Image 1 (cartoon, helix red, strand yellow):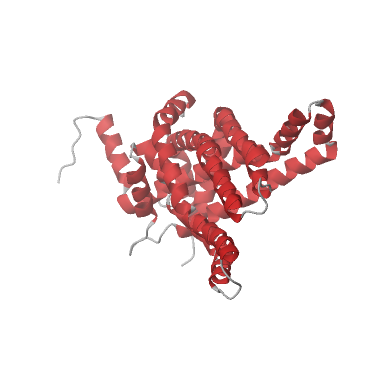
Image 2 (cartoon, rainbow, N blue to C red):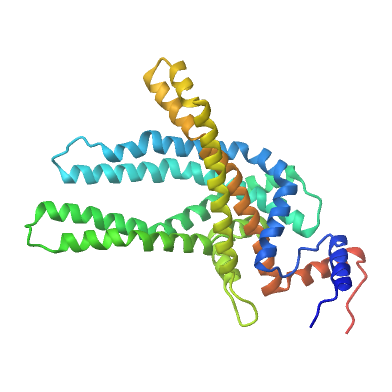
Length: 347
């Protein structure tokens, strides 16, 4: 059946005049398009309000790579496997209990603020940056707990592969060469890294709607994660949201690489790290400043990509609610009742 250009033009005009034109079932390409429109319109308040939280994320990354990660390659006792394994676990503990909470705090605040602003955009309401910040602060404890739980679940397979590799090294030192268990453990740990990464990405995707649910619906961490899984699951009438999630990963990955590479090339052309090192007479301060400067491309990439991810996840959240829960009809009913409190639907 041929499409009528006049009818399509009229439909586009009607959608443009409707302040809630995007509160409807969206295709995968439309989800990315709406997210791009929302970020283009809200980019200034989003980037202005998230500059500080992203500095916290940046500080946690610099701390990890400047002080924690180099400890993996050094040991106080090269002749003792037990000591080396204990030092590795100490490094992991510092990363989990110091660097990770800082990073998660910045991401949690950003995701809650973006969810509130994008919610106003999709619902056709007037965006309020001050209200969005209040919502972000109010939701921050629950969001931090939700993100920590999601990280623990998604990194479980990676931790298992690491433990297998460490156990293999320990058994090798304590048993004879005829024992095959160290080789089996090392083989499983080595070849399990890639599947573990895929599992981590899959689990992060399943819980990607939890920040919007916590910020917009006030759910607790566990309930929000369950609701995220439920909204992304498909049924007979509507497909699952896996296709949109793949598009989110691809888009954010491309944007992240482009920003990081562009910033890194610009800094390399002007030799910024050389000037910083020469200006710092103290070796320790010079090394710390060099690490901080080297992480600037990562800061800019995170500053843009995390809000883009949160924007797309919020648009997807409304799409899934419209598809599975007829949320657009619920909003329409609320509008009718708000316009005239005496209005009732008569059957």
